[in-house]
Structure formats: structure tokens, C-alpha cells
Amino acid sequence: NINLGTNDNNIIASFSNYGVTNVWVSTDGGTNWTGIDGNLPDMPVRWAMFYPGSNTKAIIATEMGVYETSLISGGSTVWTNDPTFPVVRTDMLQYRSSDQTLIAATHGRGLWSTTVNIIVPVTLLDFTGTLNKDILLDWSTTEETNSKHFEVQKSTDATHFTTIGIVNAATSSNSIRDYHFTDKQVYEYNYYR
Image (cartoon, rainbow, N blue to C red):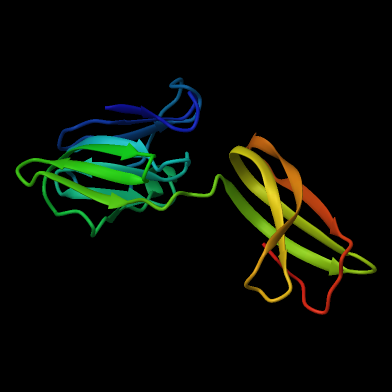
């Protein structure tokens, strides 16, 4: 099977057989492919998909259930068995975004489902605040996928937050991006998110 990531350049494909590399990814629209079986046992992989909203995480349906990885890294990819699904031949995976449900179709055990936590479309590198007369907030991202803006929120009790500003995002980026926001209202305690 073949599935796309967040754009047409990111593709994941699976082959269902023994003794072969079963999971492949491409980041250039299919011109070049990299095997990502990593530590997977030698078994058929019947379905592969990127984790919703990410091109660096994946979920696969195998002869022995559902496996996932939190970082695609070529032949060094580390796969773990998902304990929310049975260890049984799994033929297909489908993600339903309306309620963040992942459904697995098995051979002989019916359909199984779980809720998938959505990945924030941004990988945050750092976030700092510097107090002078105002508070200067600085943050950096290393990856952004379909991000529109950052909503800067503040609290004086770390419980009740209000929006104090909007900073436009890069939309999509695979390089480090720096952002800044100045808060001119300084209180004794200032919490941000």
C-alpha cells in the first residue's frame, strides 16, 4: 500500500512478504526511497501510514499487530508494538480525523480502535522570556507543518490564561525559525503558553 504524508513529497509504502524490506519512505515525491524496517521482525507489513500531521512518525499494520515509531530514521528506525491493539494479523489502518480515531482491521478478530493524540504541527526548539521594562518572549521551531499562527497566552496564576497576542507562523518549514513577542504588561507573576 502507499500513503501520503502532509504533502505530495512525503510518501510511505509497504510490501507484504517475508525476507524483504517491508517499509519504505520517500521525501522527494518518489524519486528516492529509503528502507525503514529498523528493528522490525521479519514479517509482512500490510499497511503503512504517517502519523496524522507528521512526516517523521509512522504507524504500520503487520502480521503481528500494529507497530509505531516516533522517529523515522532509515535503517535505525525503532518500532514498538502498540499495546492497544491485539497481536494478530492486521490488514488495514484508517484514521478518522473528526474524532481522532485510528481503526485497525484484523484477520479474524474484527475491527479495533483507539484515540490518537494529535501531534502539534510545530516542533518547538526553545521558549524564553527576558524581563527588562517589558517581557520579551523568544521561541524557535525546527519544523512546522500547516501552521497558521501562534497564539500567545498569559496568566498571573498559572491556571487562567488569556490571549494577549497573535504571531504569524511560517506555515510550513523544515528549518529553524525564530519568533518574538513583547508583553508590555508586567505583573509580579507572569506565566505564558
